[in-house]
Length: 581
Image (cartoon, rainbow, N blue to C red; front, side, top):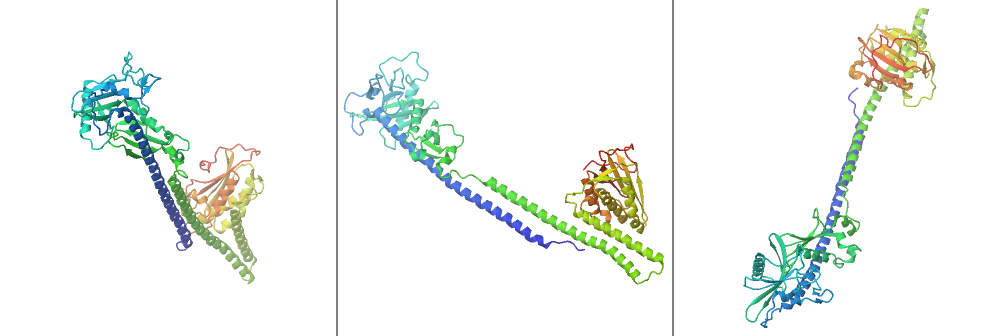
């Protein structure tokens, strides 16, 4: 027989590969669609962040302009010239704030409370300031009261000479380098690495001097003011917030021009899809950075954020590939099974043809009367009977194999093992004698076993057939049965080529044959049937070490109600049994 080929495997294999290709293409396209959706969603969230930053900046601008106008508007005459010889000093500035009768103090109607007022003449190296002496400086301004004792920590009680020089120098440089116009510029600068927020205005006089009036906001007060702008309800439209506060939806940070933090709504681990905007230099060049909260992003977009399906799609592709590999393996296995079945059909046909040809030859000889004596006719009929027996055994083997995968509904019955083994050996002896083989039986005192009908027959006839078929002519095949523990061990030993150690498990499979079988015809079913019958009865089958041949051992459990005779733990003929499989 030439090399086996299965052209029909090509088309299923091509279809499987095509299915993997289409699945991979679907994964790529689906991932591309999701990425496109995420790009659109990211742009939308970036636009949301830009709108939030812009809206906050507009509200902050209004707050700052309103607050500075109220603080310093009274001393700012725009382009006019101050003609009065009485020039206000720093202590006069708080008096321009609205008077509140309830607190008996001055306090602004708009914006945060200034920490301190100051004033100086442009070009001079001196600076005057006014201290807030109110008991609660965050609630109002007073300049005619004594400071509380002890002075609370963090309260501004005046400027040191170094601070006075720094304010004078900083604002002078700012005024002389100004490129943008503004009535009340804000200056954010650092003194001793601490951000300071100053607001000032200029008042020119008719005699040529220019007065600089200003105020400083404490850092904590500024932070409260920046947070207050964020808490305003009209920063974002109602369609955006849907009843939620701005803090629930966005994260916001305000820094000065150098990047020093002035305010943040909450600590931010990572900025993604954020946007920024900056106030003009006359308002301190503060940078506003905003982004939509990750957990709120889905509620702002119709349908929510598109989730990445890449892990699922890759998993689907992996499953498709795995199933395809399994299918290819099944196709190859089916092809191998087809080859084995073809070999089986060829082998079984050969085994059927040989005895049929022999029987036909003897019957034709008898019909033609070529055998003259009674001895010749008897010899011819004996051969016909022997070949008939062989055919019967072969048909029984095939039928038993066809029922191997179906449940056997025959009930087990008590079987006299010794008598049954002797009867089977005697039945097989004519077939063995045709090959010059002698079969001997060494059956000890073994108890009865609960077996289904013909179970021992299937086991022993297949083992004897193998021993005679693969063994040399003139050999002796020995059959033995002994009790070992709670089992009856049946062994068939021959003088054949034996079974290689690597084949001692594979030969029990259907259609499988050992390498030592050579070109001897065989169906590959005998040992499969033997193990199948033994397993169905709770037994085992294995090949034991045997010098000069092969030794097949079958272990069948003793019936529980059958008394076991007192015998040795093992018979000398049997090899050590393997672990139960």
